[in-house]
Image (tube, rainbow, N blue to C red; front, side):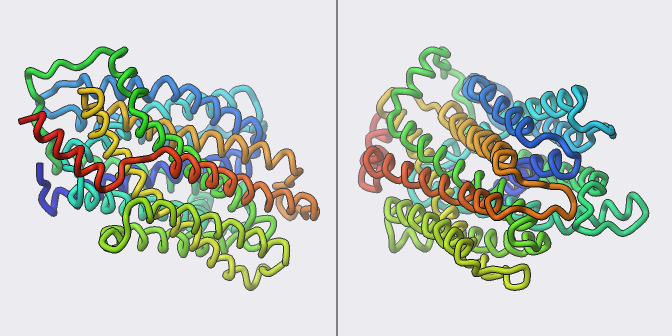
Length: 467
């Protein structure tokens, strides 16, 4: 089916809203519970990693549930709306933790564990059907790539909004609530500001998904279609070798970026010595990411998907290496920290390329799976994307939480860090991401085979089969 321009814009707005809430949790929840509330960082990391293990079972099951859904509103939209509303409630709860003198009490730890697991479950409810709509409403080629690039561009803007603005607006909101000015160094007073900000983001999230659900149609469900059994779906999924290659690449790419993303705020707070610079740094980085995703359709006229994908890996690796070199040669100071924007831009240019192309690859693997296995499992395959993204986030935040404890980072106000601690922060923020990106690039180069010619062949064979 063909979407009108207004419908494509509505889908992009939905992508923006869902990534606003995702990035608030992925980037700031560890810092909020550790630095603002004072909870043990290693425990937070364990909780978040445990929740992702739970999602290993939850996400594919949700993909199967969506695939078997039949309503007059479609397979995808009812779940998107229900998951959005429930997820907004859990976001409020995560930032409305009860006041206590002991942030490491059993009650506080249970609060974080319960609502973080619920956040993951409810996000799954809407995220899997959301991305599953792309292969359902587009055909392989320029139509699919255009919608994917638009959605990923809008999601990149959604990623940028909380990442850039949180450190700026939270102390302002906190000051309004408690009645006096709050500086960026008084992190213990940021609690109320975080709650106000979380409510605003949750409201934007609900509005964006409601608008998308009302505007974007779904293909009509074939009444004669018989959904395969759970066993048949899993068999089809794991028999789809190209989907599995993309999943491995997604794990490597997202884990590498999330490791850096969870530690870079600590980097600006305690190494660079200019926490205010973090917001501008991320603004520049995300601006380059969004611009890159916007020009992917134009770049596709000059380069193949494979060329862009490999370029994304290489550019990101260079960015991480440049940051590490700058750290060891003492290139930046609290005053001239803006030089760090150069490697930050490289990392996010590469990520922008990889993010768009990975979604296209996963959509293409749906068509490949239909040809190979005789069944079209958009929701089950895209459940693997949701699972891998959250798994990567869980691995990264668990590692980041452990790193904060292992290197002896003192997060108390006015603390002075040792040279050994700062070197440990720099190494963990850059070397593991580089190793993961190299691994992802090797797996892709050796095993992925759905290039443009192969997809044209698959498209033609599917058209003949359906006819």
